[in-house]
Length: 364
Ligand code: NCD
Ligand code: ZN
Image (cartoon, rainbow, N blue to C red):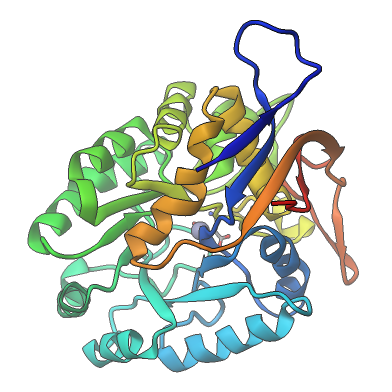
């Protein structure tokens, strides 16, 4: 259970908010680590906070085979800070050419934990994704048989569909029939952004999980246009209305086992964000768990953070909970304006602004 000590400086009477938290070390169930220098730059922040992460396969070229996932995993392990025990949980990128034999190989590998479905054209590096779902039905049947989860980017790509409706339309037109056709398939609806998604996931119980990012818990779509266009708040699925943000906060803080932490931290260099056609993706890794703590504190639900961050994910994926802990203290710090990487820069979420919680050594 979460243990929370109470500040003696707070006035007596009323409910005192905890100022220190100790959690089973959390995992990040949806993360982009990229490759090369970018991987080197972003991995330490995640490894300092999380024990494991489901690593997205949307590299160029995409990670479509177990052999490619094995090589990528080795590059991640080689980029870890000394003595880090962080474990990358690998995924395969589903294409219409993925053979059924690759699913058997994935299950046998022991290090591939899911297969990622990108509707072709939905987001960053999704060109090789799926156009016709029927073409991957044999692969989905094999995943259902072996218990390998399908991880969904849940947005339709039809340019006629309003961008703010693409998730809700996906749920009815793709996800509902998919779940009916594969009643035993484990599915994660990734980075949910709408009240419709929350309701749908709640109604489907055990075999359907959902990750929720910290930026969708913190921000509504006004953040995209505050005083001018804000490319560092642009991600996919795009931020939604306030009522949707509130539904996400209610889901995340409810303790319900189908909702778990997935940052979707998705770094792009400054020039690729601040552009006439800027990339989608928010880089939240440098304060990920601290910012989730802010959300849970604001909702008066810090006691539910451990379920969301450290228990529900392993339970869905059939993995053990982590055996060590992290500690957080209510002590503000300022996120740097940017992080230097080679001759370039990465702008993190909350750049130049205050973060309320600090990661501190766990004193047991
Ligand atoms: C992700 C990326 O940059 O790889 N971008 C994003 O806005 N979330 C891709 C994705 O998860 O959609
Ligand atoms: Zn993502």
